[in-house]
Length: 219
Ligand SMILES: [Zn+2]
Ligand SMILES: [Zn+2]
Image (cartoon, rainbow, N blue to C red):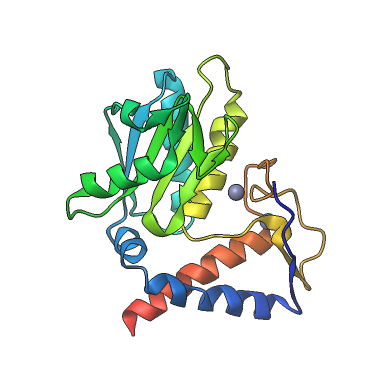
């Protein structure tokens, strides 16, 4: 959890315009724009989670996606052997990313990996329960400790939090301060995702970003 600078906005309009225009840097990213356009998500279950838990995960992904579009399709795939990417008991995120890119073979979808080892990003080793998301490449790796029974809220809230990142919401709740929103409720984009929903500020941010993407494509 790193302390980040807070960006301030003087009004809700200013905030929405800012998010609307951040799509420009994403438009340059061919992969992001393509999977968003094709709206397919592949889930690879390489965990030891129960069927019921996998069901809760795909449901959480589906619900989060619905906020932006109703036409996303989730495909649940058989698990893959991730041994090649494991060293020192951890999964090397960069190797998974590489594999995901190769596997796609010209087709374009986002890939969600459910793994049962801690993930490593560069030298940093993430805690179990943390996810590693490469937004511009449409890849997320969730890590589950096989010795822990996760509460239901984990599957709902933590998963949806990460899906919102994947959809282009690159900020956390406390990264921005916007004049005009009074008394925001607890928000799923706080670090530990203490709520089920996006607060009005983060929701406006994500939807404005998507509007920007849509407008850019139709122009
Ligand atoms: Zn929020
Ligand atoms: Zn986050």
